[in-house]
Length: 318
Image 1 (cartoon, helix red, strand yellow):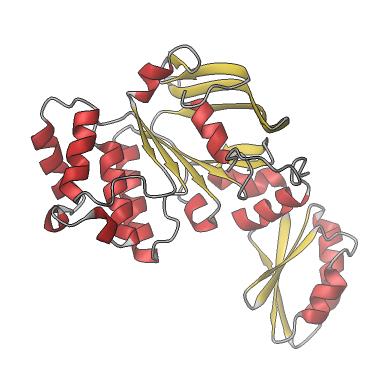
Image 2 (cartoon, rainbow, N blue to C red):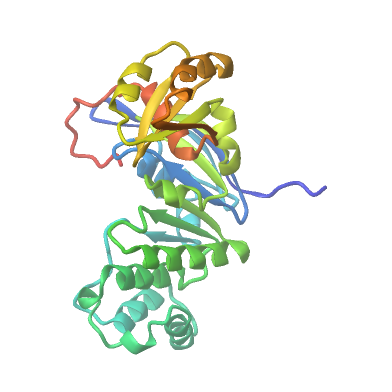
């Protein structure tokens, strides 16, 4: 069996702003062609971590490689091979779609810029809008233009920072189909997000809270790695069940999911004992449920300590 090629291998990364660590002893290996999701709340250090991993921000401590280059001493070589799509639309809104792509082609000194731009316009279905000002595009089309611009120079690594914030569900689905296509071509993708429906699109997930890595595993293995068992309770009036189960022996968390409660615990037998009285209630539908990423995320966040919540810093830590 051939060894897995890692495009990123970093260890012990730390970064402080305003005297507080926003990234604390972070290590990770990212396989080639993987979509790696960085999941966590706003302000958890996701973007700072990704930037350090790819040589875009110098760490205070630790090191490693990205695309075979040292992230501290060879950051320029890494930047030339990385495509970066920021959370906020960062292209020129007073330029047309085609003009923005032309600018990016020149920035990367592409030899056959006109041909590359023409291909991008077709591939991302931007041809009918090539003369439209970027500032006049909807959120979904801005996102598509941003991805086209970030991919213009055929990067080996794509960094996507909250890429689908503020776009409609269809645009989000289209976006992820394109990202999966890039990954199938061998491009590695790092995605910073706090959307669960985006997290499930990733091959691997790292949960980050307040600068610390809580867990790092294939997406499908996360719920099992956390070790939670879950029951689902449905009914018209769940207030009494919620109140009685919250903090009950064997129950580690109770979360509301629409018209249902998801009741989770690490000890399967103790959880079943806590649930047992509600199984005899004819007004409730009680059944075992598969623990998902969201239950795992809520559980992990419940045990995370915010060690700099009250620190006012001008630095971006999301």
